[in-house]
Length: 203
Image (cartoon, rainbow, N blue to C red):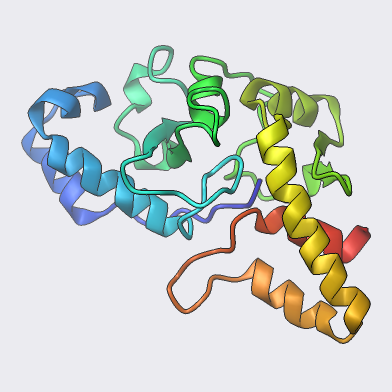
């Protein structure tokens, strides 16, 4: 999981809310699907085009708007931009990871990508497995299914790659950290960058 820094709500979304008061997010499906899709892409771009939970590359048409506080339990927050992120639809296992897997689950201990310390709450193994460092973090891993085989395999590949680079030349460490911590020239983060950063620092 990578810390996401939310910006201001986009003007096109705020204008639509002003012109359509008393609506909830699900209304966009029938009232303005193009705006809903535009909002999804805006959220993805804000996150550097990686999933808010597993950090895989987001693909247009294969992502959804994730509400940190589920829509069914917090209807007053469904149009709150600060409650919205972009999630993949399941990494290689549709609906079985990330936002779709989370579905209606929510707890006060849920580790959110908006939490300042979220990245430090998890650790990774050489095999790409993600583990929570405390009970709440592990509950988050379990309820998002973040340690499914397909994700472990993807993270293992990136961990092996960065460790190989470091083995060749230790001087690459700082350069690699910058590469995986920051957005590139296209405004994108590298997929699974938190696992790469953890590997560089701890493995």
